[in-house]
Image (cartoon, rainbow, N blue to C red; front, side):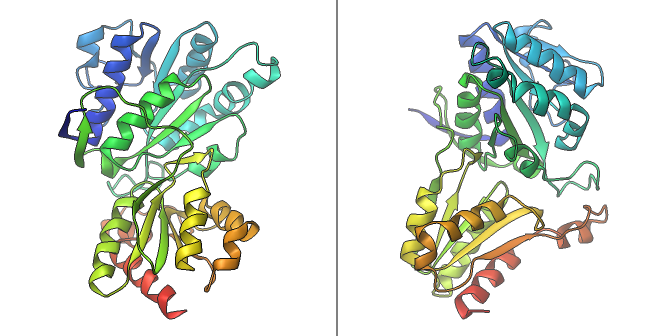
Length: 329
């Protein structure tokens, strides 16, 4: 498979374009995804390549957008919904939670909803409290929804292609700070399996499990920690629902220490589920220190840049958190 360096946004656009080329039932719908090219430029030239029938600009109505997608999915189409900010899914929760997630079960498996919902997530762009949330826990709590958090351009393309092929609704949350990051991505179509975690780095001293943008920050932290004589394993779950605990438990059995890192607030954050599963499984007998959680503060995201950075974990926080764990603090 050939590889070249492209951005996270370009990897997503390439995945959508390849899916639309190979399957005429795939189409996009959302606000400003046509001539404008998307709020974050992700859809780009897809409108000019595939036309207004397959790249559909919609009115400003998230409930209507998702409702139309659910209906299209029920009659054999494969819609890809783009919501401008993940915060706006609040307007469409009835269609997502009570319709898309449940129709397959309520109709005894006779119908499926092969819908993908993509949405920019997270802080770091100065978009303030109503446009900067990390809401993955909302969706991971709902049976019938799969939830994916791609952490790199490679993952963004492979996971999205798998999501498009999935017969069930998949929520793909793309961190806004990652859109301009670059990485090696094969030009060919490839699929990253949903529900399989990835070990990105191996170390003997502690295990770091991180999601979304915190994956790259944790890898940077691990590199700094290595210079201090601390070797960390870094694991990206990639998919929150279904969740693959195998590599996490295996790593803890080797390191005896684990730190869980997320941007979302600590209270009822998703990594609390990972912590609970660790405590319920065999890995608990390998722990030499309590599970450590490093999370965003339990506050709305501020607008002021210095405050915005202060309320979510940054690289120095991950490094110091790992040092504290090693010292038993």
